[in-house]
Image 1 (cartoon, one colour):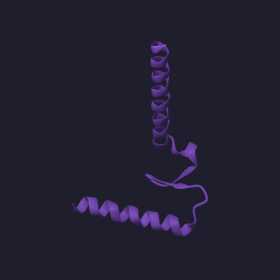
Image 2 (cartoon, helix red, strand yellow):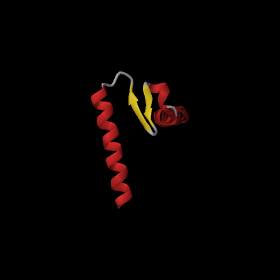
Image 3 (cartoon, rainbow, N blue to C red):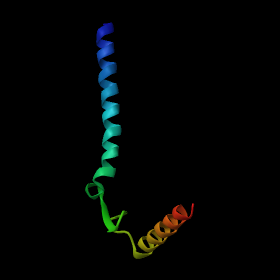
Image 4 (tube, rainbow, N blue to C red):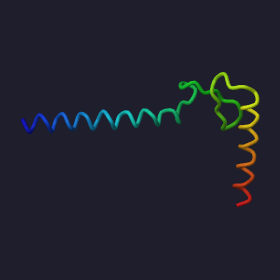
Length: 70
């Protein structure tokens, strides 16, 4: 009985660990999760309006400038 509990616990841990690895796949292939490449290094959800796209581009430029300044 103890051995069965250990096996069930190990299988459960493997399943949970596998789910967290799947979430990391979004970073490797964002196009497969509903994101489109809009500019170099900027992915935006499909169907985003122009205001959101412009705001994201502006934020990216400001962030890169702040990093260079630091």
